[in-house]
Image 1: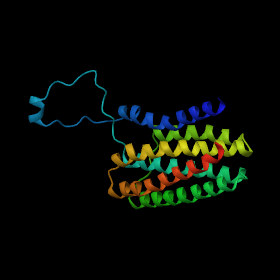
Image 2 (image 1 turned 45 degrees about the vertical axis):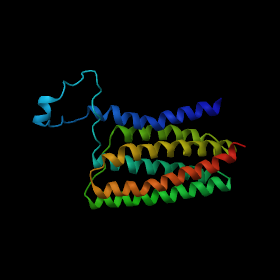
Image 3 (image 1 turned 180 degrees about the horizontal axis):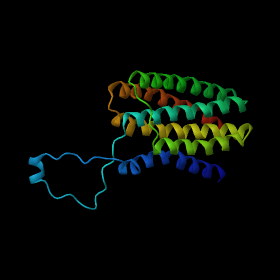
Length: 205
């Protein structure tokens, strides 16, 4: 029961960023599209009850979300490397820290090249809020209990991150180089998820 409650809370924190993405950004400085005059004369009147279209994220906002999400997982990995005694968990955490730092370095270099300053936004803030709670939870555990909590979180975190990158960040990215960086990072995140699931099996025996 405690494990189910933990996973439910984790899913809430992780996915809150994605939900805020569709709710908060739809109300922030979105411009109405210019209608084609021919279509406008023949199209039916809009349904007043239909939900408003989600405003696209800007490249600076995408850069902020990507860098923040990577740094959060690096922080989780550093906690695991300092607390765990499990060889598989330490190996996994070392891989996470290395790979996410490499992606972050590329993202920061690209932002500098494009003269783009990452812009804070509701999704970034939600990710940071959830991460603070998760770090406190991880730091309160030890031994096998910590290892399982860390790996369970990594599975949930990577599932949410992959959904966010595939469903929002890549489609919304305007700059071709930024979109390409996100696309190249996606297979790495999917490998991380499979690795995490493999280690997770060790704690479900």
